[in-house]
Amino acid sequence: MDSPLSATTTRMSEDSTVPRETLTITDNRTGKSYEIPINHDTIRAADLRQIKVDPKEFGMMSYDPAFNNTASCISKVTFIDGDAGILRYRGYPIEDLAEKSTYLETAYLLLNGELPTPSQLKDWTYHVTHHTFIHESIKKFLDGFHYDAHPMGMMISTIAALSTFYHDAKDIFSAESRQKQTYRLIGKVPTIAAFSYRHTLGMPFVYPDNELSYPGNFLNMLFRTTEPKYRPNATLEHALDVLFILHADHEQNCSTNTIRGVGSSHVDPYSATAAAIAALYGPLHGGANEEVLHMLMQIGSIQKVPDFIKRVKTGEVKLMGFGHRVYKNYDPRARIIKHIAYEVFELMGKNPLLEIALECERIALEDEYFVKRKLYPNVDFYTGLIYQSMGFPMTMFPVLFAIPRTSGWIAQWEEMLLDPEQKIARPRQIYLGHNTRHYVPIDQRN
Ligand code: CMC
Image 1: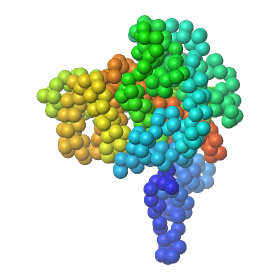
Image 2: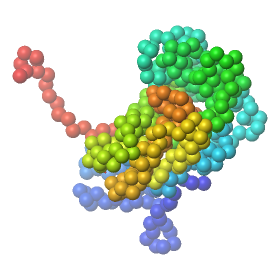
Image 3: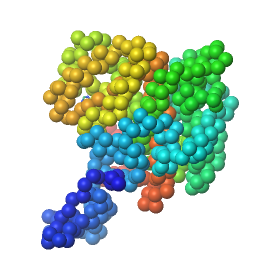
Image 4: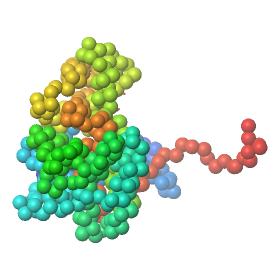
């Protein structure tokens, strides 16, 4: 099995027969040497604390703003090899899941560690499907939002509000309670997303249809008008299901780190999920798909792409949908999404912005600036074009990311809760502010 931390193990040896899995650090301030154990190419930051000049000192820390090189947990959920462009959920390649699985089956896999048997899948689907309705008071709550409220803002608040309806959710160390909240969250997230969308249009809410698939029912709640029975288009239903699979988890990104951090205070899962959605909303994370469309519209034509790329290279603007903290190769999700895009365009007509996106990608993949920095299209580069062609307004794009990511968030939240090594998340700081100062009354300040 791949190590979640690293693919290789460094071996140091004094005599070639006995490898020592340790790191020797010499503190040149004192001349003392320390031997620190290595596990999975990683040392424990707490082991550095023994390194001190004076025994009364706190001890050495490592400084890592933005967690560039810090493992915050041990995980068995998702594996990424950013250099090779590999993504696997519970060991299964994303390409296999996108081709052969469904979102609900993939969500089960993420949450339970194994693919379901036919009866497990039936039971799981039944329970998620039977938790899609929301309390009528939540509808009133949604009605309170202004007509042009961003649906991500509505999602954050409404998911947080679920905690006020389900008091049993506070019982986070009960497996039964966690299971119930999982059904509720995965079942209700599409309903809340669709109701938020209908609210912005001033259209009546459409209740869930239990006979439809997970993505089919979502399309029903979004787009049904006067027809007595909504029948989703099979191509769009499939495209949405694959997009949901691709977005279901992505190991320790900003929003997953948020649900783990917020959840580590032992708050209920609705409040923790609301925090994760807030993290996802930002333009550097799940909000990037919306920004890509704004950018492509702003570029306006293929002829203007070279000028835009020049502005990117001077640092004036970013090429949204490009670059990734972990991938230093083509994002495997972007490759699959490009295929789906063509399937959707065949049905709905080609998105006129596609040519601009392809030209951006063509130039960027050849340009020294992007090549040197290993900047490739990420998951968000092409999704917006597909969503737009499917009829979604831009403000719904990040919501389409949040719906499937809920399964990954809950899987990671539960893993954190059950990990005996985890405690309340609480980083250290290097304080460089003033030393003690005495309060100066306001009339004596200048
Ligand atoms: N356009 C232009 N230059 C870029 C870009 C970009 N999109 N991304 C990174 N760079 C440059 C950056 O300026 C820096 O250059 P230099 O070394 O000269 O200072 C270098 O590449 C390294 O970038 P970084 O900011 O240190 O990388 P990071 O790991 O901190 O940031 C990122 C990762 C995704 C936030 C960043 O690449 C970015 O802002 N991309 C655009 C937003 C985007 O598409 N976000 C979606 C990410 S994928 C979906 C998800 O999981 O959320």
